[in-house]
Image (cartoon, rainbow, N blue to C red; front, side):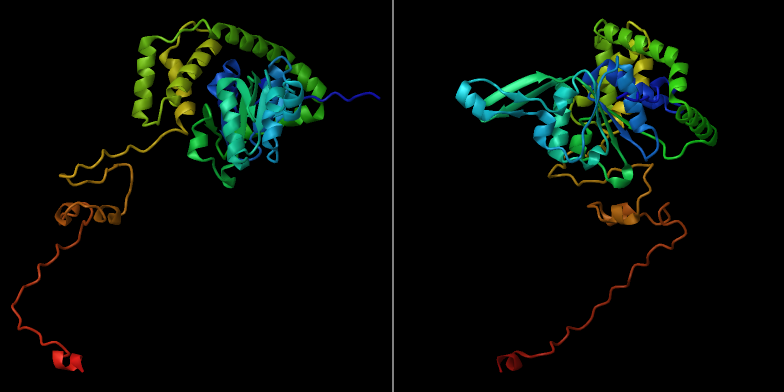
Length: 358
């Protein structure tokens, strides 16, 4: 029986998704970046780009992680009976082992159970899958390009998990008419004759594949200078990110970008190109310093934030400092009148003590 060959849309033929292509390529150059989380609506070529990247990696395997997968299906399982009886480790590989040197794709990762996302991100960051059961352990290499997608209409990841994705890319919900027209036309060409379309982009695919391989080889030759590390530390500090995961990811992503651009050193251009993808999902609001017991606390004023007056009225700040008469907050309002204070006679209670005794 003749098997029909399946043609995939070429990665180099994607239209209007240059940022998505670059972010995925950087993650392929250095998988230890920690993968890419793509946030965008349906129909924005997320799965098409993932499949195209796998084809670009020397026909690497694309492994899909279903939402209903169990922990054993993901990380693998150990045969405890074989270990106890024969003293040997009988390991059944899971999806992480299958994705080694390939692409692991998780659609709607925000709907995946948290403990599976946690295990997945652990392996993605280390490149090693470790399994421990009842005192028996086993480990194997698992280096893959992690691609997770999510639809903002269906909820978001917890901040603790969101931070562990290396790069975050938010796709625009709307596409300009001229770009839409090119996307539709090129998709119609592919659907009409997939074989001819693939042949048409064969040279571009080969050139991109070769450039990707050269970038991977150049990666280890690019060093992190002390000046670069200082610059990265300042960028992350100003962004109020927690911990140093952002620093490490920014260094790796900038180095991968320099390798892709065929440079021997990391430049400010490389930092500027990737810092948005590294910091977008890690930004935190600046926190106020701990209040001293002898000094009052004041709310932090953000000029870009249009707050309601109640936010400031509820603070510990004295009333006269919160809204000055004639100030910008109460423009056009008359100053409050001070009520007159007069002495009054004492008021006789409604019930006397005698009536209360009865």
